[in-house]
Each structure stands twice: as structure tokens, then as C-alpha cells.
Image 1: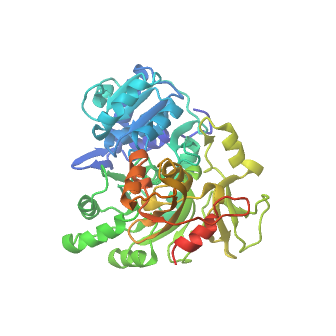
Image 2: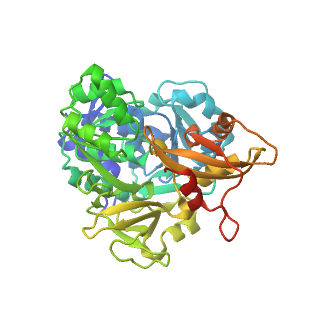
Image 3: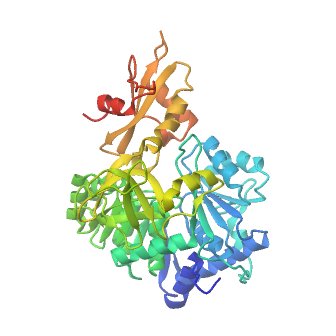
Length: 504
């Protein structure tokens, strides 16, 4: 570690030194102090080093949230290994693409995914060892075997510029791209959270978003950096979430629809005390945000960000400038440019570009994609927006080449869904669009033209897509039309499809 470096592991060392006896992690009835957490991290790092994991090696994780997941954050950071965070909602074929791209040396798999993952693990020569997140099972060694050692410090020089994690992003052209985040990215993002929300060691976050997701990881590490407590939910459960808010005095959480409405509806029956909450963030409609604030007294924040910006680059209380995505954060330079890369006037819509220490290192093994994204010295987000006279960002959708739909907080590119639909032998043409959805925030709609003389039930096409890619990418709505509007060059006119078949 150099004179000016500070890693994710250094956060844990600092906490053990100055908040040693305070609770760092809660999972069910289990509680670990910051000192106990560091001991687990050190032992796991030693165990991984003893099995040959070195700086730069990838450590793949396919599992739901757990204490072990948090240990891997720390142990990988200490060794300079790079976590390959895999979305467990993907299909086996999609997971295979992620593994092939990341070439991990070791892989950790939760019990729910071992039957599916076992053939994949054996398929890749790069994976030298595989572990179960818990006790040994089948071909997977026991996680806790790696903790049976002295915890002696491996001598590894880890800098702020070194990679900390690879987060596979949504498939732009049918294949996910791995966004590489550094230790410096993570610590800068943490400091933005801490400043915006005035986080201290007294804060407690409910980690109910998946820890493979930038929002789940970002909230957890920010509160940890402040010396606070993480309550780990294996996966979202409204009863457990409400119990922990009440009993452990949770102060903040991140959520995606329909988590918030589910919790508030359930609490009408349970009547848990939610008064400890002071901050929440996510994607919600105004009526739901108003209800949440009235029933809890907390403030709901709006934001704009992506994995490539280590989370948030703009942030503000939801109703501070309603309809906006907030103001640029303390370490985010946010501008709007036209198609030529020139800055536009205030109030004009263009592409959102970002500069600063939150911008990721680039896409794993995709040098040309990285160079294009970083053209003109800015990170081009692929999102459109405008800045008002006070600097608030108003989101205006995706650029045509990177159009995105976000059902329940997940990222889905229409092109990926369209590619699968066109594999169906009865479909001639398709255009996939996003439409508002009361439960999930946004839903996927497929507008299809069938081949001459063919007929196809909507449900059959929906399940066809679900059999090929992750189920959250399947259309919720399907309509069949005689033809799709075209542009002058003969391509499908997506804007006209939206006008005819979108919200109206």
C-alpha cells in the first residue's frame, strides 16, 4: 500500500481499531462486532492465499446475501483479488457468459444455486476451487474450512487504483459487459454517501437489496465506512425487514419496487415501530414516496447513477425539486452534451456525461468499448437528461443505442429481449419498449409482427423468452400487429412504436 492509498480493507481495519466492540453485522440472531468481523476477514484472506489466490485473481460469487458475502468483500480487498459479482437471477447460459468473461480462479456458490452451477464450475479450467457458502455440499468445499488458520497477514500491496470488483452490466449487444470498480471508486462513493446523509457510527442499514448490485453494495459499504451496522437479509422478506427496523433501529435502506409498498402494506397488520428510519432511496412514484414519508417521518431521496459511476452521481430529497434526479454530488462533475460532444445550453436535453473519482476503470476485456465510453475525456453514460438553472438533473431516457428498461430496479436492454423473441419461429419482427407499471416501476412490452398465416398465444411467447434469458427480462405485455412503423432507412421506428403502444 502506497503513501496515498486507502482500500476497502483499510475501512475494516479502521473500524476494528476505533469501533471494535460496536456491532458491525447482524444476520438473523447472529451479531458480530467490528473486531470480530475483521478477524473473520483476516482468516478468510489467509485461507484464500494458502489456496493460491493472488492479487488480480478473480473470485466469483453466486449467492444470496449472507455474512460470508461480507467476509468475501473484505478478504478479496485485503488480497487485491477482484470479486466477480454474479446476478443469481440470470439463467445458466447467461451465468456461463459471465464466468467465461471473468475467468475466476475460485468460485463461491450459495446452496440454492449449486445444482445449477456445478456443471458450469467443472466446465471452466480457470476455476481451480469451488466452495459452498456454508457447509460442504456435493463437489463444493465448505466455506468455513478457509477460516481454519491463524489469520496471518498476507503481504500484498493494494493501491486505490487496483480493481475491487467486476459488476456485469445489462447486455447491450446480447452479452454482458463487466464494469470494473476500483478501491478508490468505492471509497469516494462512500464519502459522498456519508456527506449527503451525515452518516455516523450510530447508523444502521438494512441490506435487503442483493449484494451483487451496486446499490446493495454501495449502501452497505458506505454505512460500514462510517462505522455503522449492516443488517443482512438473505433476500427481501417484509416481515423480517420490518422486524429489524423495529428491533435494531435501522436508520436507512435502499429499495426497488415493489419492496416499499409491500412493507408499508404489511405493516398495517404488524404495526412495527418505524420511527428510527431517517433516510431511504430508490425508484418510486410520488404517491408512494409521500405515503412512506408520512408513515415513517423519514426522507426519501431521488438520484441518478449506474454501476459505471460506482452508484450515484446526483442526489437530493425526492420533493426538493420534484421530477428531478437531484443535484450533482460532491465528487461528481455532471454535464450535458450534444451528438458532437459539445456542451449544450442550460435546459437543453442531451447525453449525460460524468467526470470524477467515481467513474469506473473501464469494461473488463473490452478496450474499444472503454475508449468509446470515455471519449473526449468524459464518461458517456448513454442516458439523456437536462440541467435546470439551479443545477438539478432531469432524466430524459436512454440514448437510442443504449435504450434501457428497468423492471424492479434491474437493467434490461430491449435489443437483448428482441434478439430472443426473433428466435421464435413464428415471429417476423418485434420492437420491445418500456411502459410504466404500478408495482415494478416499469414493465416490458413486446410489439410483434407474426409471419404470414401464423398465430401465437401471448403467454406462450412470454414463457419462450423466460426459458432463454432471466425471467425478469421476459415481457409482461405482448401485442400482435400487422406491421411496425419504419424510418427512411427501413429500420423500425422505435419512437413511433412508443407513441402508438406506450402509455397514452
